[in-house]
Length: 337
Image (tube, rainbow, N blue to C red):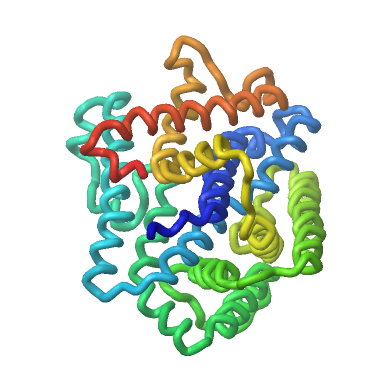
């Protein structure tokens, strides 16, 4: 008997990849604090503040999915290589090759490939570096689970990040290979809760909204005082973003949808999320410079709200369609999703 696919992890991943596109598409407006109209900047800030849950969602859903499976050392290495390392190598060479089309073949030949061991070829690929090391840590995280130390680790991790955010100068040597390991364990823990009461979900909704307002308002306040964008409350490890991510994850857990068409659509987006993640930055660039015969940019019309919304939707839809088409090619199918 074939087990029915659980829908809510696909919904979370679909949310995550769409919000990643929101983050990267709106960033030119957010970074141009003193150059755009206040109302347009505030809209971009609202979008970006909400979208801070995107990357934590990816870590949390990965934690739920991989930490519920049994892997021996060999199978874990194989999974890491197939799911993360090969896509990382592919996208790194993809962006180096694209840069060579702009700067000449010498750029590709003379590129310092050893530098890829320290930094990504394109800024958004940092995520694949972190998730690669987190996958290698799976046996250690499973040891925490088996010893029932998940809550202990989460409290320890949150406390360390909170003190760092508050700039409290204490001697605290707690820094696992990735600073995002806590998100994976939280995703595992929440994902395995059998039933979450309405009272808890209502509390999470209120708490999410409060932390969203804190992110939005404090970013505006600090940027206004500095005369330029200040990203402190945007950090994926800031307490406000951590609480937002946990609360929305709880609200989306066990979510279902009656429409079979919407379910299929969301599941398909989820399937190609890695490919969309890889290619969307290129499409943001190509659309902004008019490579398709027209220009679409969040900074269009002075960074207007309409330009931002059109840009987000265009980048996401085009990324999805391109990855769907590329997915028909066998050699790259497993890299894209």
